[in-house]
Length: 323
Ligand SMILES: Cc1cc2nc3c(=O)[nH]c(=O)nc-3n(C[C@H](O)[C@H](O)[C@H](O)COP(=O)(O)OP(=O)(O)OC[C@H]3O[C@@H](n4cnc5c(N)ncnc54)[C@H](O)[C@@H]3O)c2cc1C
Ligand code: SF4
Image (cartoon, rainbow, N blue to C red):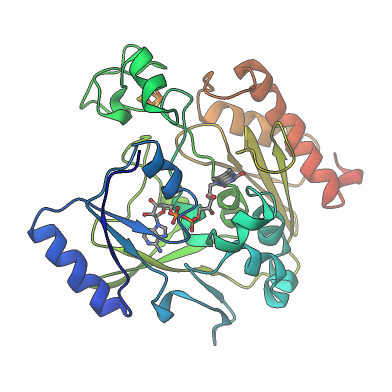
């Protein structure tokens, strides 16, 4: 059963940071909620136990899709995935993002789920995303506050990587091949970081967002002529998290592939367009992260599917001549 918590809905970034500052000074556990579609299941399973829930839903600065004077497209972190899918500007400049967003969960969930929440969604593992009863049966692991990893038995508390929970965000590989940048806001002001540099190599300490920071927006550089596709392996076309997801972009004679569903960090690989380029990309992605049995599909199958899904995406972007 979900424990009781207070709910706050600040109406500006200043009010948000004043609230977070007060919570930190009083050492109150808090969680930030965007659409809540990743967080609420965690509350229900007792995987997150905040005393205070901070909703970002009433802050106008986090919304909207705009073209910046330098040609970049700025997407507010609170933009719902359903809006990303339907937006004409994104459809024109980065259709692969809508394509990946359309593979997240189900249509009702995509009305609430946000792009920022998808980028920051928690990593998953079969031993963690379970009911308290199930977790008690095999003993809590590091990510659940225990002293063991059931995937890598030799892992030691305090030594990184401690947890191999895998990234499952469907939009992340699409954003990586679009060279997305994250815009973050804290009481110290704004900072930007390339999505490619954002992730850390641990399933608990997953990324570089500080506790008092929020993701404000995601920006995409203008790259006319780039084409890209996203392909996802999942038990069902909708509703299931990716067992594997591959985005592939072609920009002139350059290829860029990125992967979700396997590994703590989203893997990324580049190659020049030439004979054997797809095999090279498949091999680079497959060797970037170990594959563990943490998912419905066996690990060997998921590993073999990496190269197959790079080819599948290549065929979608007119790669018949070079696949
Ligand atoms: C049945 C089901 C199926 C699903 N299937 C998929 C799937 O196939 N693919 C997939 O990628 N996801 C899936 N999800 C997970 C989830 O729905 C999506 O990842 C969604 O995009 C999360 O967005 P949200 O706005 O609801 O995030 P929230 O749940 O609100 O937040 C997620 C995390 O990000 C943090 N956060 C969010 N926004 C900000 C911000 N602006 N600044 C700082 N921190 C922030 C929150 O604190 C939280 O830790 C599924 C969920 C369910 C319930
Ligand atoms: S990888 Fe290990 S520590 Fe991380 S969630 Fe799975 S069992 Fe727990």
